[in-house]
Each structure stands twice: as structure tokens, then as C-alpha cells.
Image (cartoon, rainbow, N blue to C red):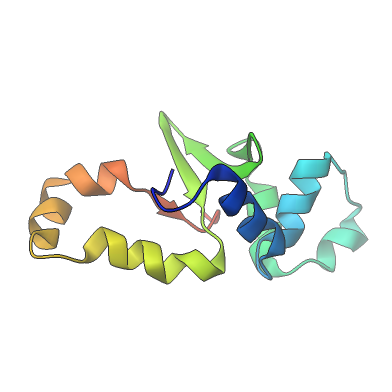
Length: 112
């Protein structure tokens, strides 16, 4: 995962997130919300729920799997920080161009 965070830290951030928290709770607790309940969720939570089974729980962490890649569904509090970690530094342009860093750090909001 992200070196500075444990899976428990990421799970807690996802559960408390104003955007994806509702989707996290639905998947974590195995709920089957009605259409009316889904309409009450923020759009950012409805989108990951509509992408099941690609968006799923891996342990206690919400992830999106596509082909052979598993990506973290990033809580709002971490998105900018992950962006900085991916694109900062003197060799960022080289890494992004070569794809080596992009393939090792994948960031997703859970939306297609």
C-alpha cells in the first residue's frame, strides 16, 4: 500500500470520508441498499457501488481491480498527498514518462 499508512489507517480514512464513506460501509457490511437509499448517497459513493465487482473490499480496504491491476480507492484526505508523492522530485518527469512509477503507485477515486 502507501508506505506511511497501514491498512487499518487507510480503512479508517475511507470509512470516515465524506465522498466514499457510504460506499465503504455498504461493501464492508455486505448491505444491499434500495434504490431510494442509493439516491440519498453522494454521487462519489454511488459511482464505486455501480462498478461492482471491480470495486471491492480487500481485507478492510476499498480497492478497484481492473485487469491485473489493483488500485486504492483513495479517500479525499489522501488524494493530493498521493498526487504529490507520485509527481514530486527531480526525476518525476522521467518516471512518469517511462511508466515505472505510474505502474507502482496507482490512484483512483473508484469512478470509471
